[in-house]
Length: 336
Image (cartoon, rainbow, N blue to C red; front, top):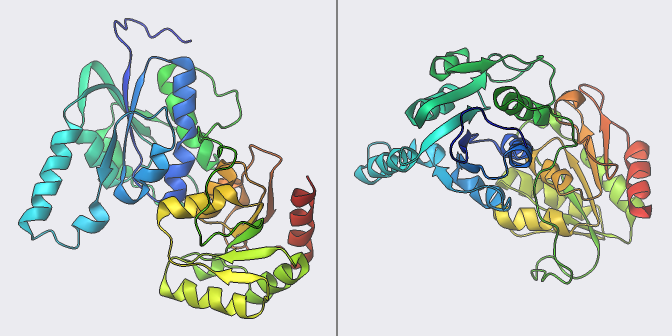
């Protein structure tokens, strides 16, 4: 345990990482790092309300403060919305924190950091720079008392870990630990999942360039037959895409619309996950499920699952993998 100079009580720490799904997920290993070096610390988190179920799975996180900007911005003129926003800031300011970490580096997360209360001698710590291709907003530094500079090509998981380590005085020298629990033996499965071992295709993503061609998904599923393929979706467009895949695969099934909690459960039960560079694929990797990550239009170095041999990363920006590569990886993971 690192001794915090002058500390008379356990540290109170607030993490500000509100979105998106992958970014929130990649921030989780900060919690295990801090807890390992400061086991008595209280670690709270501000996160978009849609991702609270994911953060809550990490038992080491204390209070979760839901942030609902995506919903609030649709009704800012309503009295009820303004009351919710005021309640959010009241909750945020109830506690005095020794450290507030903003590892997203946006104006909106900077404002949250700015509103948080510090204990005497406390610090507000954030990123001095963004990574290549990130949406980093330099104005967020206005809210820092300490800005940590990182190599622009630092992995998404390592960024938050290194910021916390620099501020709290320890080294990052262990594999990423997301603090996510294993499923208990014999855990109940919802009816839509079925009882047979299955592969899940996380085929959908907001950016078309990141997708893998439909004929590739179909060829892969045919080669994996008779293994069941489950096809989730998150928008009407993705549902249509799932239906196209299912039409070419006798062993595939389009799932009903899933909540975030159910999508997480889908990943946790899977015998095999194949997915493009998207948050749900990264959830499977964080749970160390057998996962093949497909990169087509995003850089491999940025988010590849590099903490377990149960994760195989294929392709790179502008270089999507072919079916034979993905099939070979899938068979290797299934064999192991």
